Image (tube, rainbow, N blue to C red; front, top):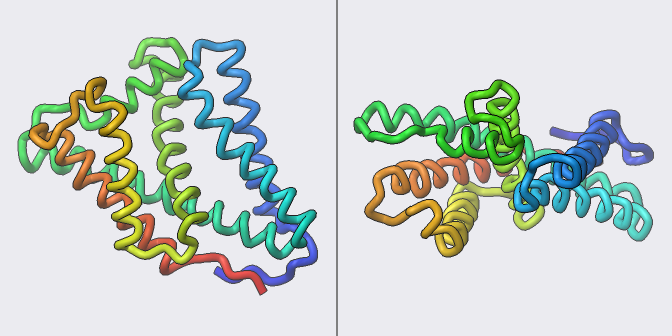
Length: 212
């Protein structure tokens, strides 16, 4: 996608900055006044806040063109990270059905909603919050990847996804009881998340914003 003109921010870029600011506000309010644990709230605060500050600093030091290039990478990374997460969500119940695995493919989503809101996992607000957080995690991973490797690439995306899972496994193997002998972890954590990375990397490679 080609964006013409560099003398002013485009409406989509202004909206994106506004959304980042809103995420910071939501995360702070949920953390300070709500039941949201800090480990969840920080995912709404850290990257959006960094992005806004970095964009302002880039504009002040290098000009609007560099700021818009930075925002473009974030937007496309977020878009493809979320799109890849949707593909992952379609894959998870399909592989459960094909191989007759005995697990809830969306157990983590329900857990996210309960932990963030403090409500029962079946409550509509908890369900909506859980899905929003789940998709945001996909977008967040895509945004970071796009900053590290703006040109994308399916192989690079796969390596990125498996690296994330390796770090998660190192820190949370006891909590999630994830191991290479666990069919759920193999189906979702290795193959499924690998698919997420491939879709993310391939999407960024094929469709990127170019500024003229």
